[in-house]
Length: 159
Image (cartoon, rainbow, N blue to C red; front, side, top):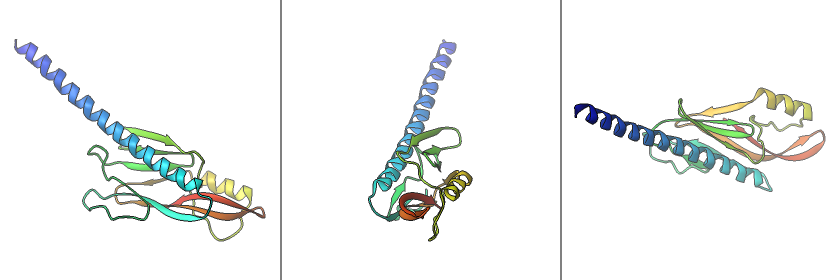
């Protein structure tokens, strides 16, 4: 009888652990999807704009930011948000969720000068990801730059 009770208790505990893990995974996926959708909306803009994505602080209330403020915790756990040129990852150190971007973004802050296609390729190759945790913020901008004598409207992300 005692052995049966132990098996039952182990099964119940395993069920709750699995439910908690699923809740964390779902929370991370929701955060990655929301951040990717926000960046995609900026990319769709027909004109220049600058906004931000931030992760709230687990101890401070939301600050009513100009841009998107993501929750500090995913199902009670802290996480990092990592932006790559074509996708974004929410990672709690054990689990991760990814969401793709409709159009790749540049992960560097543009200066007010002309660029060549080769320069942009080098900057994109050397700036492969941006990472932030609770209380962090990154700028997301859509702006016109000159590329090989032509004006191009591009999306950038930078800390």
